[in-house]
Length: 67
Image (cartoon, rainbow, N blue to C red; front, side, top):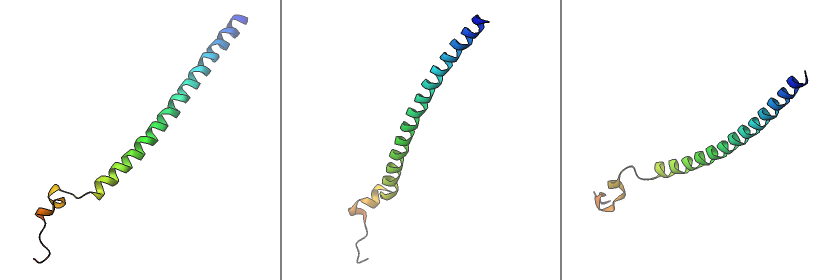
């Protein structure tokens, strides 16, 4: 009986350690995901606010206002 109890206690200790390790990993990955989402939003805003083509951003290709 004592051997079985010791084995269960050992297994429980390993499982608790594994659970803590996995919990820290998930928390770190969530932080990375949050950072990536923030960077994606910033890039998306830059892309959507930029002119759609290079020709539109080049003043030589613009039609003069008197036409």
